[in-house]
Image (cartoon, rainbow, N blue to C red; front, top):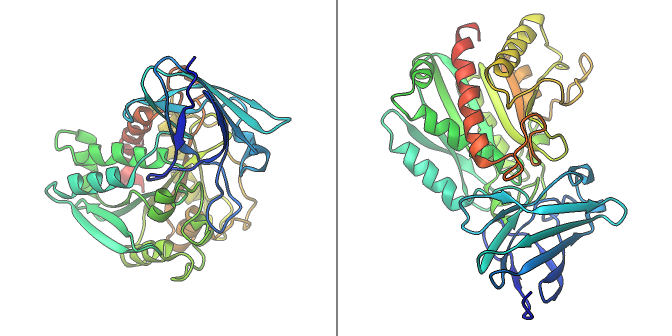
Length: 377
């Protein structure tokens, strides 16, 4: 073990950690709250150390985190090249609220994060790459409170209006990894499902609805502490311009199918949540939603229907949430896709857990499922 102190920093895009003490290769840490908010859960920091050091990183105060139930059974994400993200052995003590991360470094620099980060630079690279594809238009729907563009990629010649949007909650980075997979598929002229979809649909794709929170290392909120997925009933320029500009664009195009992509801290599975409790619910809307859910479950073993959220009672849906608002407002088949921060219980991977690679593959299955059912939507 090295006798020199390691160094820790989070002074970069999406960085988040408070450093309380460093002694040799052991550190006492905590997570910074989202600005103007009580939410805390996302962490992302870099450790500089000696090769062979066994790092002991204790993140304290997690009883007060947004989702304490997210820590049992969770292993922190770790990378030495910021490309491949594995998992570090981690243990959560429910009595003390401490997550103990242990990792033996094989490089001088090691990054740790709640999930594999998706940087603002990577977002702009993705937008630029896909916007260069023939038939794709990039629109700036509006701007965040800190002036960042809310990018929307539009493609397809069909009449059915499909909206895909992600990272209302910025710490749910798996959502933009999913978007990368979806966009790579749709931009591939050799993909038969993509070709069929683009003939029948017009896609409106917003890969990151919360760039301010993403850059700041927030879990759940924007620059002024607003949870965007509780603003859809009445978004405002002062609190939630990100939602306002997207919803205004939806009003212009209409919506037939919508997927809001998220991550769930506690449930170790992929699942979707629907709009069962909206006032205008019909059995036909439910039939279409269930057909999509069941077909996706048949297509990929990474998706399941056993675990998920309870459904709202009739007429009791929260219309401030996007899936409910979009279904009610447009009569759309709308859903929230949730992926785990932990591993997938049904197909565990001890090396990576749920990973960026699996997010991207899942996106392809989601779109292929839509291609098979698009005539019914």
